Structure formats: C-alpha cells, structure tokens
Length: 246
Image (tube, rainbow, N blue to C red; front, top):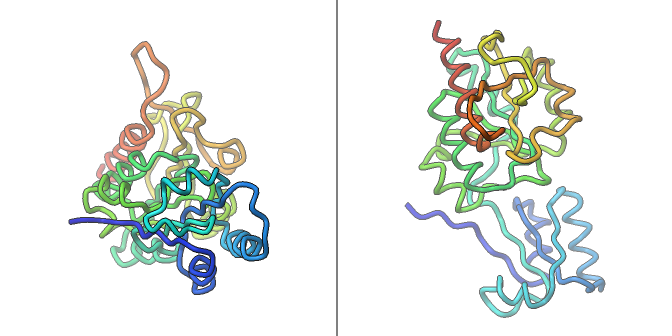
C-alpha cells in the first residue's frame, strides 16, 4: 500500500488550503519575502499553529514538484488527525480504562511511526503529539507504522501540558519516562494511564514533566545512557501491558 503526503504550491493555493481547514503539517516560506500574500499565509498558519520554516529559494526549488512555488510550499498530512475525545471514545467502546501514549519532542518520523505501531500492538487507545517540534503524519510515518495508522488514532494538540491537565479530569494519571525516575517495576502502572515519552536527546520537556504524577526509569546495564525513543516507548508500554494482565 502506498502512502503519500500532499504537496501544495503557490500562494493562492496555500491560502485556500488553510481557509478550507485542510490540516497542514509543514510550511516552507522563502526567506526575506514579506509581501501581502505571504503575510496572509503567515497569519493563517499561526491560527492553526502550523510549523513555519524560512528557507532559501534554492531549497524551495529543490522541494518543488511544479517549479511554480511562488516562494511557498506546504505539506498536508498523509492521514487525518483524530480528536482527543475520539481516543477516549475508543477506550469506552472496548470497556477498557484509557491507555494513551503522549509524545514530546519526537521529530524523527521513523520513531513516530514505530511508536504508533507499538501503541497498536500494546493495546493503547491512541497517541497524542504536539503541533510544534514534532513529526506529523507523513508518508514515512505511515510506512513505518506498518499499517497501524489505519487502526490507532493520532491527535495533534497545541499544548501538551494543558491536554494532560484536561485528561486528568477524565480520571487519567500520567507517568513520564526519564532515566532519573523510579524503576518502572516499582510503580503501579494499572488503571487509566497516559505514558509520556520524549526524544532520545532532550527527553520530555520540563513543563510537561512537571504535569506528570510519576517518573519511570528503565533499568539499563550497558555502557551508554539512553535508549532510542521508540524502543523506550515499547519497553514501558509493555510493562503497562504486563501489569494490566495480572
């Protein structure tokens, strides 16, 4: 099965895409161009919290499929995003306590795709990602997920910390992955739970980490100090599975 994110080029086309509500993951603008249509595109992008990257014209020429980008190229998601409410509904439909994986600073699409695949196999009801500093649902993510995107809803939110606060009102509690936390085997990871995982280099951001109820670490005996983000997510997700099965 082939997956493809859509490329939109040209000022009027991109403006109309924003105004129609089409989800746009990434926006590339020619550096230094500040005319009226470009200002309009920037305003529309900020309304949707779309990531904007300013690049040289030569870079846009490389990305362009038509050669008529007019200083603007946008990428739409290969898949539609779900709402957080859809994830909670999925848990209720299965009569299960919610199990959600939340990702902070995961910018590598291969990691995101692998985590979505693990989420599906571990029985998580959905994945939540932030709008900024995060990979979107690109074709690479879809391929790496090995089809899991067809079954596991992914929601994109403006503020991960605020989303955690809202989900706490729904009865969830949150465990954050961090090498300085309590060994995961010593924590009670049953019940309605959100697992928060950060990037291999930066980990979970401080503001998000402070919203979590517990900090979990994975025992490591080797000579290096961190796991790949998708591997860490898998290890912790399956500890949650193990405890739920007992």
